[in-house]
Image (cartoon, rainbow, N blue to C red; front, side, top):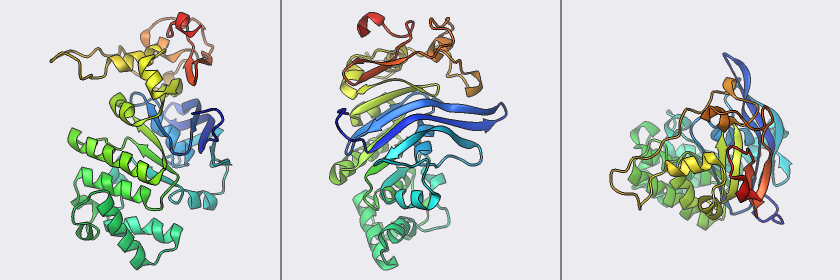
Length: 332
């Protein structure tokens, strides 16, 4: 994002913790993120790296009572969402920020008809009558390419396929024409064909509405196809961020390079074996205070317990500069 562009959403030094058997431990550790109007920003990383926790913290939708925001700000058009009274926050969520949740079946109300669930934010935020809102709900179902929208509007979530439920989630998120859409792993548990259909639909709706999108995924291919800017998260921290073209052409952090190496490419020979990343993402109670990727690779962190600094190594390209994880010659 151009430094002169006012951000639509700016997350500053966000730290989020969850309570568990090992105590209350940070799962998001000082994350910074900026998203401009109309921009698509991706957060990528393995499961357990804190991607969803960043997005859900920003709109205060963490599970209760275990989730807790310890520090930071989430500025939406200059207002700190983390400091707003609940009533004021509720007037922003749904109306100005739409959320597509990871598990549609869990996010949808199982005892409420599809049409009513789409109509609810229209009545709440836009003041539509029930009849107007239900008509708009049918139009939205048609817009997200659900066949026989009038019939589907009268059905319950369990009677729809996974792909259709995800389309319903998109319709709800877009209902009030929000400025920002948060899409949290929107293609989870969908087969490849349906994944591509859902992603194409998101791109189309983004073009038509002009909404900015925060897209969360563990799939680099999904991020590459859709995002203008990419944030790479590992063990609760952003280890690299850059414009998408720059990041994929010149990855600087060892974790980013390892993720790219483990991604299927069209030019790969048939039956090629993908290199895996040794070890696993540590649990929050195991997090080192220094470089966490060095911790995973079983090598001493050159900076010891000090957290590697995040520095700009090329225009708009920021990297957590651990001497063992970054080619320091490339960053001069």
